[in-house]
Amino acid sequence: MRVVMKFGGTSVGSADAIRQVAQIVAESRHDHEVVVVVSAMNAPDLRTTDTLIAAAKAAAEGAGDATALAVPRLLDLHMRAAAELASPDECAALEPELRAMLDYLSDLSRSIAVLGELTPRALDLFSGLGERINARLIAAALRGAGLDAVAVDATGLIVTDDRYGNASPLMESTRERSRQRLLPLLERGTVPVVTGFIGATQTGVPTTLGRGGSDYSCAILGSALDADAVWFWKEVDGVLTANPKVVPEARTMPRLSYGEMGEMAYYGANVLHPKTVQPLVQRRIPISIRNTFNPSHPGTVISSEPGNGTAKAVTAIKEVSLITVGGPGMLGLAGVAARIFAAVARAKSNILLISQASSEQSVCLVVPRSEGAAAVFELRNELAGDFSAHDVEHIEVLEHVVIVAVVGSGMRGTPGIAGRVFGAMGEAGINIIAIAQGSTENNISLVVADSDGDEAVRVIHRSFALSIPAPIIR
Ligand code: ASP
Ligand code: MG
Image (cartoon, rainbow, N blue to C red; front, side, top):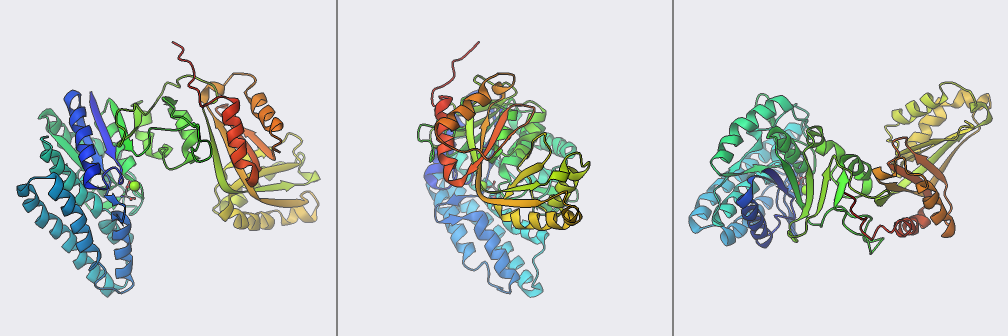
């Protein structure tokens, strides 16, 4: 099997963590072809990418010595880990290499300080350096563990457009270059250790894929290399049925479909963003989320198969506002919904939930709380004429609400799910303010008061017995 696996910043955050990574790679290498993708090192007291970005910004504000503190700290962090994990010869070769890369940043920051301007293009040179130094460290550590490994900069693999700071891959060229460079390594039994987060334009100018972009790099390479599986090594056992801080008995779900994962994207940091895994979903490549620090746990497998169960997980989206636009004249007023959504779009506000009852007397929508005021401002402008005609009579905002979403593709076509959700809420005395279910039926969303949010999640989790694994139906 060909496996592309990614280790996040915390999974490579210390010498001990990297030792664990080396063991995982060595074991996987027994049975599989392995490509490793790494983030920048996130040590408890030194987050590499943040540190690099802060230095670049300080330079832009005129600090010619912006990297004076960061460079020795970063060099020390990586070389101390190297001393524990790689041979003295390796360390002697690694030190000047990392030093040269970091010195280049110091030169760059002096130029930025003189110019007094930091372009997104220059910022990408800074922010992507953490992955470049870390790939070299991890490759040395793997060699220290007896593996044949080599660091590879993704600037030579992932071809992107030139939206610096948030570039998108050009998949065809990426496929060609990655295969050309990596397949011969795999054939030889070498483990390529590829930098996450970075790529380069057609003409070779370095770019980054957006913060947290190493997941995206891993998915892009998994797709380009036609991997049989892609494993994301994180610091959790997989995707949980609910936030364990709210529901202590929350459990890891063994299987999820791509669609279910997409529904859960808001759920928290541990779920992969749908855009990130799009290259894998397109090719139906199964994804695993596994725990670097508990590698014998099978984690969660995400694939085109939905697995068992109806409702699978309960999520909550906090810090949102519910906006209701209502009035007697909205009945049969064609185009009013389009104008409402256009106004919210002008406010650059992202709509999370929509609901309109068929009486058409009101439309409600939920937006992030921070965007609520701007959305209402645009709505009032847009609907001013309708107000004077009394077609629209109110625009109301409820600020202290949360969205609670029940997710599971097995809910589709299964009667009684909504009844169970609402029954449970009724028994617990929780008032539901608004409801939405799309016709895909794999998500039922409720809007409840802030103060009821956690209890609503617990009640639904309990009513579907989500802490007990669904029986396996074959
Ligand atoms: N190091 C980059 C960041 O912190 C990318 C990543 O970790 O995925 O955003
Ligand atoms: Mg990260």
